[in-house]
Image 1 (spheres, rainbow, N blue to C red):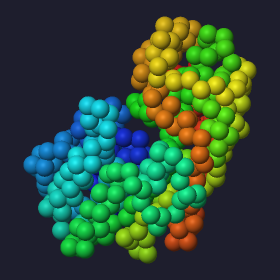
Image 2: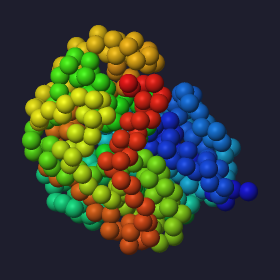
Image 3: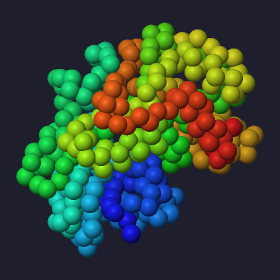
Length: 352
C-alpha cells in the first residue's frame, strides 16, 4: 500500500508532468493530478482531477473525498493578464484554494511543496549576486514567489503541515505540447536556418553568448521535490535545484549547428519574436520535406521566451550547496541533456 498520497496542482505542465511521472513509478506514492482540462497524454497510474483553481468552490468540490492526501505539490501558475504580466493576486488565490481544498478533504495533510525559480533572485531583471543562495535578500521588484512563500510560512504555523520550496532555473524538458521550451524552440530555429541557407547565428549579444548559464532538467527537479517533501530535516526550507554544472552558449551553440549540418555563425542580436513568424511558410516546407507531424510552428517554438532567456548577458548561477548539505546530491550534464532532448524531438517527428 502507498505510504503517501500526492496532490499535484498543475499536473499537465512541464514540472507537474515530470513530477507525476516520477512519483507514479515509486511504490510509496499514490498520485492525484489536478488540471483544468483532460491531459492529451495521460500518465499511467495518475488519477486526474479536472477543476478551475481560480474557483474556490469548484476546487473544494473536486478534491473532496480524497481523504488520504498527505502532500500537496503546487506546480501551477495563474494565467498572465491582458498585458502579459504575472498577477500576484491570482497566483496567491490559486495556491490558497488548493491548500484549503486539500486541508478540508484530508486530516492527513503533512506537507506543501511550492515551485519557485531563478526569478526569486531576479535572474530575469539584470545582474544579481552570484552564486545566489537561498537566504539572499529579496529584490525590490514585485514577485508573486515572495507572496506565495509568505503565505506558506504563515499558514504552516497555524497548521499541522510543513512546507518547502524548490528553486530551479531555466528548465530543460521534453514537452511536445509546451512551446515554452528552449530545446524545441532553438531546434526549430536551427532547422529554419538550414532551410533558408544561412548560418546558425546566436540571436543575442556577445555578452549573452559567453556568460555562464545554469539550467535544471525537469526529471532532476522532480526527484528533488520528492526528496525535500519527505526528508524530515528539509522541512520549512527552500532549496536551489539546478543540474549543478554551468555552461556557455558559445560552447553549446556549435553542437546545435553540427546537429543540423550547418555552419555556426556569430552573435548577432535579433528579436526572434518579431522576425520568426514570417518564416511559417519555410516551416511548412521543412515539415513536408522531412515527413514531420504537421503542426503549426507556434506549437513548438515560443520566440518571446527565447528572446527573454538568451538576452541575459549576466551570469546565472544558483548555489546548490544547501541541498547537498541537507543530503540531495543529484546532478545532470546540461550540454549533454540538451542534445539528448533534441534527439527526443527528432524521434517524435517534431523536428528534422
